[in-house]
Image (cartoon, rainbow, N blue to C red; front, side):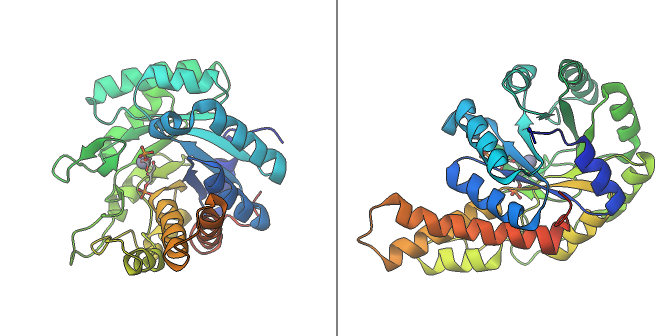
Length: 311
Ligand code: G3H
Ligand code: 13P
Ligand code: ZN
């Protein structure tokens, strides 16, 4: 099966009350860890690439690695641009074979966001590519952009119908209290998501796929391992998994996960190198990182997303 768009994945996920995992990829081991777990469980997949990932690994390498993963597993895989910030990067990814792009106009005014998003949608749809837009601002760090808590803002339900109808987007990322990175809540703060806002949005957009960014749970086992072997992530706090499960059963059809993959890879490498300080073959220390990613994705698919057996 060639790389696919997210259209059928989202239709099925909406109807079946589950979500698709959208995992950020940067290199071979991350792609293999994710796709091997999904292949075992026959789960559809979205592999997403940020501007930073394209800069690190180059578009063509990631494209070819993902095509290889698709050939190897036979899974329906969508290749998606994560947080495209302007028309040019979206165009470059569409021209370069991506099946889905995100145009993140959330830092602009409502009108500017609509104008930019509609422009990307027009270009994408003419080429059979789907588009994710964003309304509302998440806190946290993406690439080098750090959105402080004061600048973050929840999505306003009264804006979503107009945004979707005037832009023609295929899915919408919203802000209901998740944030990017490993520090999602302050120490001692009780994690909370605004499910009331999600419900209002879902009522205004029936049968429309919603996307949740910043949805890593910051897996405690990985944090403990990193801390045990010389790291310091003592204040890291993620989104509780029961909240993610609740989101997956609702109109949320795509759940974005990056930080958990980073933690899994780092925990594997740190543990291996601490126990085997004389090793210098990258295969020896990257393999445990890849195994952690595989175990993580298996867990997410079966216990959080509910998309096992849906490919
Ligand atoms: O939302 C952002 C993702 O975690 C990607 O992070 O831009 O550092 O690759 P990055
Ligand atoms: P996390 O930092 O919670 O993994 O979020 C990733 C994300 O939203 C990518 O777009
Ligand atoms: Zn994001």
